[in-house]
Length: 491
Image 1 (cartoon, rainbow, N blue to C red):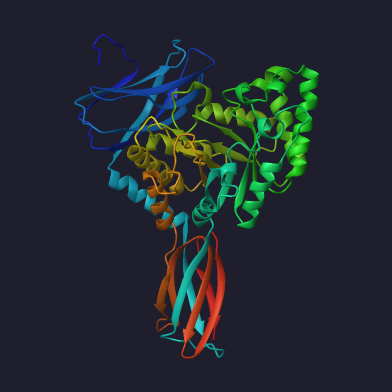
Image 2 (cartoon, rainbow, N blue to C red):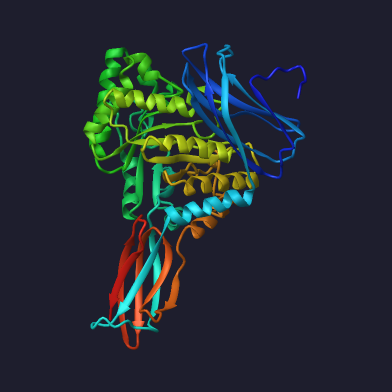
């Protein structure tokens, strides 16, 4: 640390532990010198520093809650945790009730497991009796989970078409899918009036054939770089007509086919359509999309919301503010999309951000998870496991999508396999977690009470019972619930 630097307000922290110790941090923040300000907490130590360990959009005269955290790999003798206004203005910053709580990796993982056991699993008791209601002690019971309730999937591209080994590999693992590029406007209408859904239709046929849940991505992309070139050259009136045609064409074509739609992708970072059509353009997109497909969940999807807090365009409070603006405008805003393009994950920050978003009461999905290819494949795998465990264990996360569509020249940032479908380290992590998050085959005997009990992951189950020369087969659904699920089978 440079002894000439001035940090105020700040906490001087001594003898923090390293070795991967996870620190959760929180504090109340108040400003006095501005209407509002984005306050950022940072940490500096001898060997490690975090430019951002948490942010809050503070308003003058009000106490605002900042929550975040960091991970220390090497133990510093001295650290400084300090606060600053991101635009540099002096805003009369006051801090109160600060808390710094350390957790070992084992403690952090124990909490993960506790949340998984309570939110992703449920107790089941299977009763087996004869027609007179007498329990059949000693009957052999076999229970198998045949499908999972939690959507866990990946992006695919047109490379999956006609590629049976890739299709089989995908179906064996995933129950959810998103098309990487094939529904984007530049793919479906590369030239004005030349609308084609041939590739998307073929991909949807694969999805339907295997009963996979599909997200719709995306209707519009606010980044002009990914807007069709012909669209960028339209006048305002021509553009208004073109976007209306785009929504009507896409949404009528695929009405009730996709569970979600990312409506105006990455609008916290880009604003091509609002610049051209006015500040209500995004509002109109959401309203029109809802009218066109009222059963689809409409998502606000963006990056650097959960990955980091250094991006002032997409802090958690910025996301919340934009979402509330749209809701107040009458938008049916149904879902929170967190892309999840990570470089180095910060698990306590990730949890703090999801906790805050969860207070909105909307479904949260990690929509495009990957780890930067600037890291080696083994490190990618380590970080991917951290992100997936954090997401799956959080009770407000309703689904996770990987951004790992396979191409001959690789993937966007992270591949699960090579081109021969041989697992890379990230693929090994995914396979390990898929197995861990599924109820293994149960083979047991009915006890003296005429029943057998177990804890199972939510989903669909098949059960078979054999007693003497009699057999019975049944099935049941295990949905989220606090109470034990009771299933009765007669032979």
